[in-house]
Length: 390
Image (cartoon, rainbow, N blue to C red; front, side, top):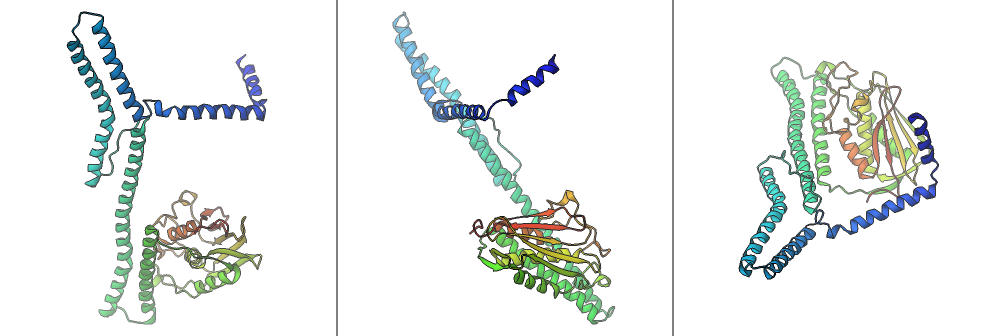
């Protein structure tokens, strides 16, 4: 019987007309507005109401005791003393409940001043102090995350700087000690390590501007085809990629860059310098992870809005596991992508995609890893002239 009844109930619910559903939502919204309007007089959700209730209770209690004294043989002074003591006890009880969260916040703030960001205050109250406790815990979590990020940043920067410096030092020591000759191949490896240091310093400068939030956005309309052609031309004449050892140094001139813009007269609205930074980083990553004689495609299409742009960078490398799609845009994140060159290091700084995401979000756009049957496909969307950020 219960099985035959359930579909009937479901059927009656499904037969509710849109007007009835709208009326039901309107009724629930009316009750919510009434409940919100009663908040100033709710002692459980308003400190002002709680203090008002305390005053009213004290006056009522004193009046009641005076009436008892008038209609009995009890002396008025005894009733007065008793009413004062009762009012003080009631006030102590209420004030303790109001000030205990503040004392707890003070203790947690002192711990945070000493570097302990793990402590939190208790929540559960429905009044302004409860809202303050929730905001306080949110602030403590943000400070804890910022402190953790600062420590990770110092450790990661130290590691990233140490790696090319150690390689360059070992190379120069070999040249000075006569172990290896200062031939063009050795100098190319030294130059590659120096350029890696330069890229890291430039990325760190961009990262500092990112954190300070002082980077202006100079958005303008431009033609996509000649603009991307210039970006690809600049990328094609970059020097080679330095791998784990001098024997693994190779030029990636074997990777073919392909541009696909449709329609050819496509225009977009963005900051050309910031977009160049994004596309250059994406092409650099794609080239670095491409197999020998691989192909990197930059595809541009018109977006949904006026002068909006949808851009994709595709390669034929090993791709990115789906579990790491959101992590690759974090700072100093390289994931566990196998190198197509048989080396564990790809020569990157781990900041390119983080800076690319920052530049895209500065425009109000979005960047993500998209599904691809082969290799990796990075898809970004810029909102265009009507929605770009200033």
